[in-house]
Picture: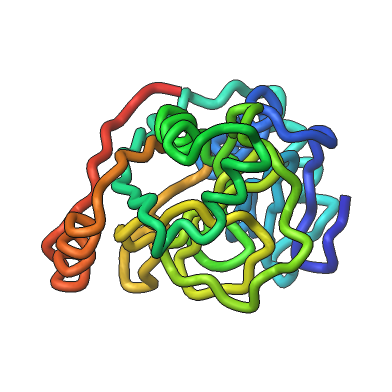
Length: 234
């Protein structure tokens, strides 16, 4: 379907799940591997793929026809990354951890353990540059968004709501439950790939104490820290 006069949207469904995400990412890989004439960028979401094109070089109708041809072509499996990111769940960062523990019936330590034990899937990056949406949150941690959103949470904050967890690459308003923070930089326009994480990546959080958080943050600011990751098959 058309999205203005410079993009089309390919929709795959109306839910958030891994199988649907796999279909979206497969088409994204296929378009990137053999971009139709005039296509300039693709953006993966939970359930759809946005395909941007140059209207001076092609048209929406031609792009749709080309994409229909690509959907019949199996893209090569994407080599993705599994990231291990330090996360501090200390009270000064975990603004809502006590409330989350109370509402879920878990102790704070149990809530942290559940979150840190989960291997999250990066469904999409959006809302703000480098902002990842991570699923799938354990059932026992699922809560609706806050009824009183904050005007500002600090960059690096880790939060949960519904079936997802997020990290904020910059100071931002938020209606999510903030349970910790990472000292890792998530976005830099000067990087070759400005966003640290990409759709399809996996993320695990490694709990750290407050002194280690500040040490890593100082190393990040001095450009002496690189988060740990490994390449894995889709």
